[in-house]
Image (cartoon, rainbow over all chains, first blue to last red; front, side):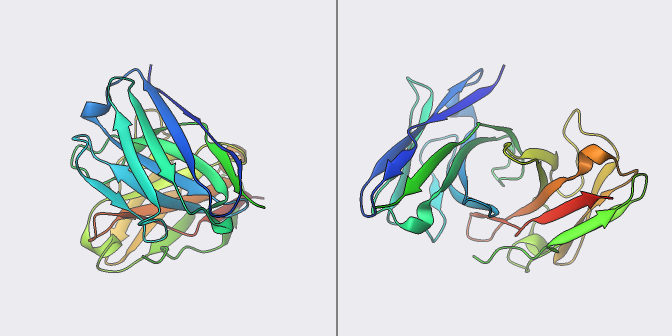
Length: 122
Length: 110
């Protein structure tokens, strides 16, 4: 069955870096786009980034562009979110989600991980 | 990209119907039939309830339905049940190949 497991969250100081992982099982990353979505404590959902099924197309929210980088390792079937120059406002639960929309229009996130909490604080 | 506009809260009694609106622009909601709705219970990951404006994933009750007119999409829940009480978020594909979520609506079942 499809499973997504995030890891790598924790407490980090402002300006530092952190890398999150999303280990996928039950399917191969080469067939699906993968997204990162975050949710600040008590706040709504915010889309962060996507890496398409081909691994070449990547798009970012303006709020993280230039600071966050999405990548994947198909041999490990794992997606990564490298976060740098972290700010207090990046504090959130970070979810990875599989995009089941065959047209790459991001409309069908049927599978989500459990989330990993990132806290940016001195 | 600004978040899509949703009412902060809606409420209804068991058995009633409610509708949650989601307003965007011609660059997102109005421009694509790629609107989705997610249900989120406290401390849980979001759950997909509607995709492509009005399609339901397997296993989602037919009490949930979606529609769109112009730049506004809507989620209707009929026959309200206690377990429907949750936060609901819309989302839309955008002209810049990104995704935007709504601000979220808290549904209270009275």
